[in-house]
Image 1 (cartoon, rainbow, N blue to C red):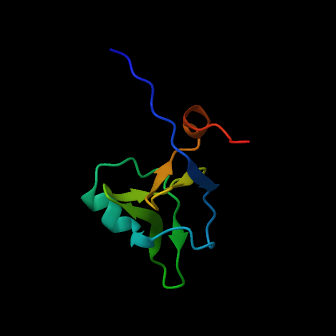
Image 2: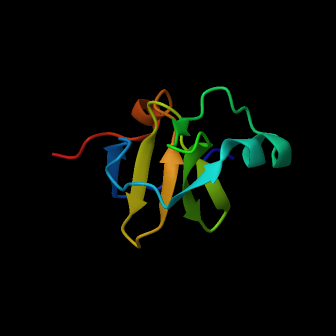
Image 3: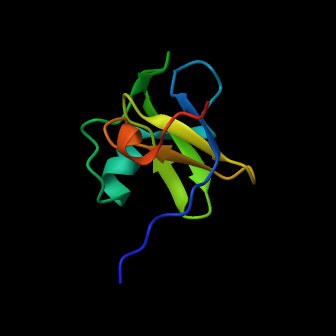
Length: 96
């Protein structure tokens, strides 16, 4: 059987650094040593002490690290997740 994904109204915002859109930052060295994700495109911020951190969104599936061009999706129930910028126009249509 084939199914259509049910329409879901969401708020979407292109991620911008220094706007408080993330839930936190994690050390880049911790990310690359603990996870199997492709970390080449992660946004990296160098702090004054020289440490490099990456922003993330925390949701029911765990942490989603933010890449350049990603959107922050906020569902009507307040749940937030990250959507890759190249996938965004295929998944979401602007509402009038």
